[in-house]
Amino acid sequence: MFFVAYFIAIIVGWAVGYRRDVNMLPAIFSMLVAAFVLSRSAYIAHHWQQYSGHVAGVIELADGGFYPVYAVAGSLLVAGYYAIRQPKLRMALLSGIVSAALVWGAALVLYDTIET
Image (cartoon, rainbow, N blue to C red; front, side, top):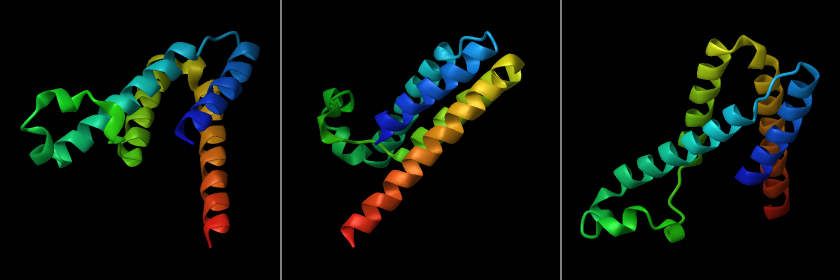
């Protein structure tokens, strides 16, 4: 679901940015990288006992070790940085973030409804 929300953010942000003649794709890519790095780092820090024996397991992504809350926090920090440094990107970033949040929220509600 994380990737679907980011894909929606790219499409909506690009459409809004295109009308305003701004390119927000580098900001979205930076948000994605920050999300993965912060999320994975938080997971590794939390489960350090498991990873201290073999450091190669830190970069092995097969264990699915990510914390979505930290991913969102990392994305929002980078979005805030870009919004402050490049005011022309604000509307495109905000549109992308809101659309991604709506898609992610709707998916969570749908999942909860199906599961119960």
